[in-house]
Every structure is written in C-alpha cells, then in structure tokens.
Length: 314
Image (cartoon, rainbow, N blue to C red; front, side):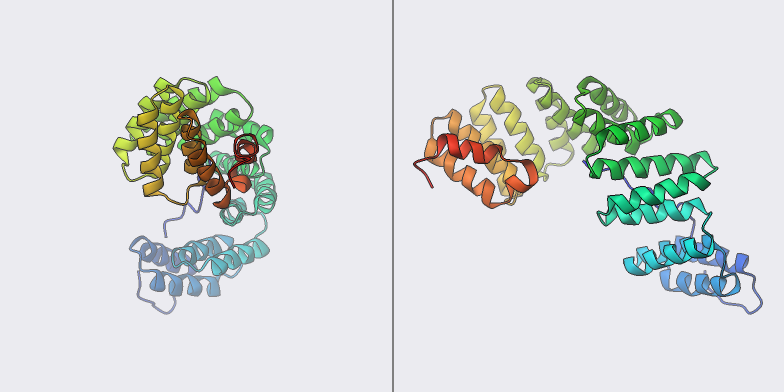
C-alpha cells in the first residue's frame, strides 16, 4: 500500500500592472491558482520570477501551477531551478521528493528528504519530510527504516492519516501485526468513512486469521464502494477460509466481473475450485493468474500450486 505524497502547501488573479513588486505578483498568482485560473497564474508567477529570480518559493509556486496543468516535466524543472538559486529552502526538497516518489524513483526521493531535513526548521515541514522519506523507504521495501521515520512523524502528529496508514504497512511487513492493527483502528476512528482504511483493517484481520472480523470490515468497504472489485476478492478469500464456498465463489466471480485483469482473483478462484475438488477448473484459473502477471506482482505461490496440482492440465 502506498503512502500519501505531501505536495506544496502554497496558496496559489489576473491583471498585470507595471511597477508591481514580486510580492504583489506572487499574491495575485496565488489568487489565480485558488480560482483554478492556471494560465493567468503562470503568467503572473513568471513575472514575479523575472523581478526576483533568486526567490526559491516562487519556483515552488510555478511548479504547483504546472503540476495542475499536467506539465510534470515543467514542474520538476521549476523545482530544480528553485533549488539551484536557493539551495537552503527545505520546502523545495520536500516538493521534489514527492515528484520523485510519484515517478517511482525512491532513491532520489530519499536523497532530497535527507537534504531537506538539514535545512528544515518548521515542525510541519520536518514531519512532512519524514513522511515522504518513510513512504519512499516502503517503496524500496526498507521497512525498518520506514518504521523509524513514520514513528518519528507519529510523535509529532498522532492523527495524520498518511502516517497511520504507512506505519501500519511497515508494521505488517515487520510482523508487528497487533501494532499495525492498532494504527489502522486509530485511523478508522478519526476517518470512519475512509474506504482504504476500512479495507486495510479487513486485510489485517484476514492476515491474522480472524476471518469473521475480516468479512465484517470488507462488508463495510463494499457498502461504501460497491464498484470496487478488490474488496469482493478479499471478502471471497475470507469466506473460503470460513468454509462458505458458495459465498466465496460469488464474491470472487463478482471481483473478476468488475476487474477482469486482477490476477489475484483468479488465484483465489483456483483455490476455491481446489476445495470443491474441481481440479481442471482450478488449474485453468491458476494458469490465467500467471498469464495476467501474478508471479511478478505477488511471488511464486501460484506456480507452486500448478506444479503440485496440475501436472495433467496445461
């Protein structure tokens, strides 16, 4: 599960008057940004930069504007230029680390967070840098480091959703199941209708073998978002483990209907077929799971199921 990126806390009007200061132009650019008038905001912030080219904050605002126009390369270039002209501005490193993380470049994200932490003075900024670094470490599967960073951020804010979820992810991979669940339940109390949190609680109970509780939370998740196939698949697995094979099959079939590319659903349906002693159908689903990329995403357990059960079925 991936962490929420922390990106640009800037408030980002049009009318260009000669003689305005960069501060005045920045304020007008921010107002245009708030109104989603991005062309005007970009014109105004470029004018502000022309008057104050060594002000790194202006480049952060420009990056936010460009990101909202989906000019991601331009946004990255603006942040990099801002760092070049004002290398001690920690928020620039925070924002670029989020860019790197969203681009699946965790090593670069971690480097920017490390530099940003050298310059950050504000607690909010420091916490955000720890969160971004922890999220990048999770992407690298360095769960020990991620746990330390997220735990530090948690001391600064015990109700931040991204911190709680990422702490749970790190704890789960470190086999700290009870601690992971406690963070998710805390998050659920703070955000009772957050589908991702509810689903993760269901998944945690499933991993702990409490399938009845797992189904309870997947029921809540499906009620909130009945068009999400992954939740049917997860509930189907828990129902299978409880011996409700009819309910499990209905759930997994619904999961495949909603999301036919989900290799995990074919794996789960194959397991249900095995329980029903319908080996050819099980093997067909196992092969489909592999064809849809299961091994690269989740590991070799389906290949082992094929080797152990499907010698006569190609």
